[in-house]
Amino acid sequence: MPTILEPGEIEAAAGSPPFLHLPPRDLFTLRALRLEHLAEGHPLAAYLRLIAGLCRVQQQVLDDPPLAVAPDAQRLETCRQHGLPPFAADTLVREDAWQAYLDALLQRYDAPEQAAVVDSVATLRTASPGQRRAWAVALVSGQYSLVPAALVPFLGAALQAAWSHWLLSVPDLRLTPGDSLSQCPACGAPAMAGVIRHRGKHNGLRYLVCSLCACEWHVVRVKCVYCEQSKGLEYMSLADDRHTAERAPLRAEVCPTCNTYLKLVYLENDPDAEALSADLTSLLLDMRLAQDGHQRLAPNLLLAPGDE
Image 1 (cartoon, one colour):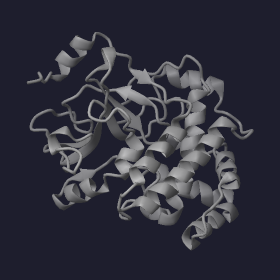
Image 2 (cartoon, rainbow, N blue to C red; image 1 turned 90 degrees about the vertical axis):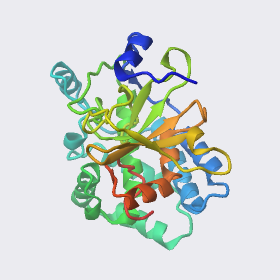
Image 3 (cartoon, helix red, strand yellow; image 1 turned 45 degrees about the vertical axis):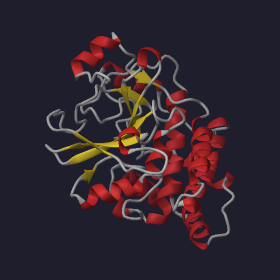
Image 4 (tube, rainbow, N blue to C red; image 1 turned 180 degrees about the horizontal axis):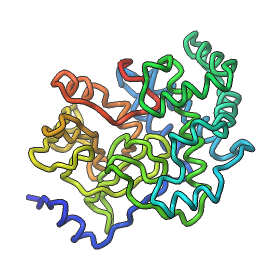
């Protein structure tokens, strides 16, 4: 039987694990491939394939970014010196540099012949910079009710492309933990999910994945990332024809203290798993947890809550 390490023991066993992992430069291609694979036989196959196509356009934007003004180098250094997220989403989203990424994404996106998709793309193309900014501010701050649901995947995809590009454009990035365990140290956005790594010195370590820039940062296991309590944590999953609940590649860590949960992807059980695609293909688990009264605080910028 495997030994379960407590939080302090995990860090001791691992020595000093790297605090930060940057996303791979083919991040969006990997997401697209995974979504296309998981779409086979899935009840939400059409939606997953739509998002896969959007991820491929995100990769085009990342590979050939627009000529937009990057975040000021002096600002980045000042933020670093004061322990603040250098790509602070709540600040940069109110400026206009990211809108060039939205224009690039919409220009390169070949919308399928679906009325809702065509209308959404047209709405974003013709919206004023001020209206786009208002929607983006609402989306980044988690106020989904202020954004038309059909616009969320396209707006979220553009924001992800912009922040991931900025993140990967800064060499030798040095970051410190944010005010909250669930807060991305690079941009301050909340975590989308966690990943339990399975190889080498990282075996068994948990990294949270940012919902915006895809940065990953180390957080000890067996601790709620919202209230930082460890007592009574439960792990829930749904069995299917490929995995038992105990060996599921994705489980939700449920905290009875603050009544929240966070999805965790276990690479030991599925080495090809990826956080965003795993989240989108496990919405039945969200529905089950919501029925039980548990609250989700982790956003997915390519899905409007309530549209499951």
